[in-house]
Image (cartoon, rainbow, N blue to C red; front, side):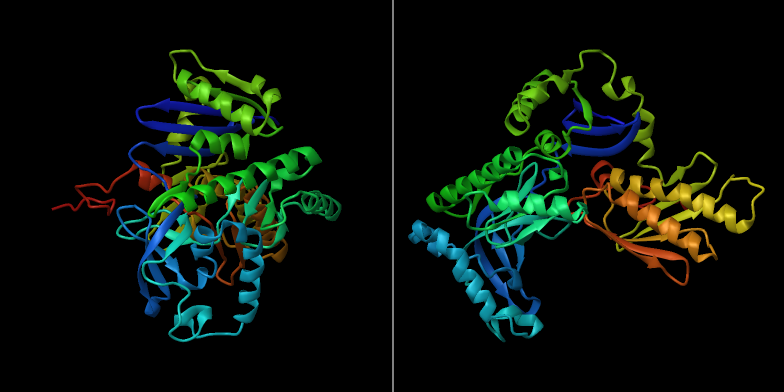
Length: 441
């Protein structure tokens, strides 16, 4: 079924809902009061090096210094770029040769550079990218493995690697995509071919590869000309990301309720997708909230609830904690004449797709433990696990799922680099201080 994208702009926030067959399938939010640095590239300066924790603190112009692991700093030195820009095409070869010489195991506290050694010096300028937003008292997590995503490919200027998304399973298609990218004129760096590249023609892929490469050249130009700390590349806003990551052939229409953002959206679509896609873009002019018109307002409110009710009367409890997110499946009001084993299997099969959907909607990450209703038959366990994995495959974030344990638990991880949706929209209650309960005297 075709999808629709709804964009609501109001009160210092931008909300994006992806609707599949009239059901909320994905949700994003961006607030003016909360700025995300994720994906930004900075020219920073090393402030301090702490071999004991295998890291360095880098000043990138934020309130708190960012943290960079020393093992992730092999190609962070900008001296060659500043002195001799013409050395750029040869830099990758030198870095790869250095990496080959340092593959021998080293003590954990000193990375790959030997005991007491460090690839960095205090005061050194480095080119880094934010891979995790600041959280609490901690600054941003940084990496020197810079990457610039496009619609179909991700360009990695420092990694001589050509990869294809694992979600593209057909060997013939994987080979075709690899051969296309190998034909491009870009010889330094590497690419990851994204899932949405499947079925795309050669011209689209090569144009996208050139687009992200040109972006990287702009980053280098800025980094060479200006002093640190400096923002060399800013990741696009939420509307840019929607066009880049979601406006595909299976999207029937995009509706937005702001005239100003509508004009911006048209420019993004023409730049990233092409003029033919402009007919999908529509300006919502009514007085009624765009989410109410498309009847998803109630669904949006439910994504903050602890309990998620299923059609059969069963329900799922989702409880995020500081170290792990716990998901519990309960039969609730579910009634059936089937055996307890069949009843448990039926509820679990209904719950698995909803769990995958809720993880996407709430943007929950880290370690997640799912407590399905106990099943005895191995066939039932396998089917529930396969269904969960298939539904998680729709997620743009990377996920890993382990087998059902002897206790009936499924342990999984989901990649998330920003704050959870709940932490952005809610604060701890001043009366119960986040306990969720009020003491009775």
